[in-house]
Image (cartoon, rainbow over all chains, first blue to last red; front, top):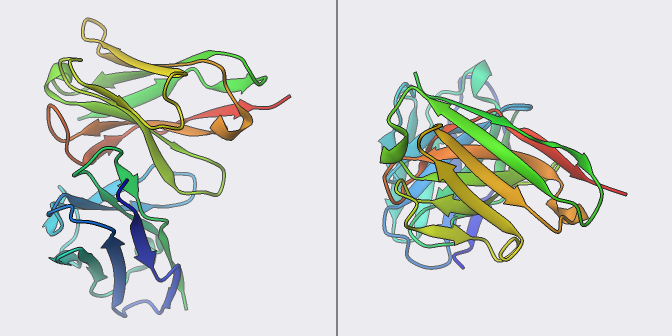
Length: 107
Length: 120
């Protein structure tokens, strides 16, 4: 099983600031890596697929990058609606696995 | 507009059975694989099962293998999850999610979820 490790667990950021979230895979997943945002009481929403491609309707302030088994989600300037929990997920191998999540909270 | 609507959740005792349904609309159902993803209260996400667009490929997480069965009915645009021998640790919100390809891919659309509670 591919273990996905996200860091940090919680990130405190002021509105307008940049947020950088990390995700590490325990083995290669090529670029079959997605990022999701989940707000309380809601289903997750796809943000990024293929490690760096924004999903339909996702603002340009969200970007993804990859270096080997290390993946990064960057939110360039946090808006009030961005505060949530973010999950990375690999879809290269079964079982499909998610990271434990990073909560982005208001500083 | 793609829509996924789950139903069938509820409260039941350990050892019981339940069938979840997910009705899809707004796209050609057989073109895309589908999955069930669950989230225990206050916890992260776990993909428990996936089925290809033509039902030829079916996979299960070890935690549910032998107890859960996924299926789909293209005539009804509906995905199912038959859950047997339920345990307390199966308590979760169950989401159906569309995968972005016929045999795999990311989860590009999600339903709103249905809560399953297993408790005596």
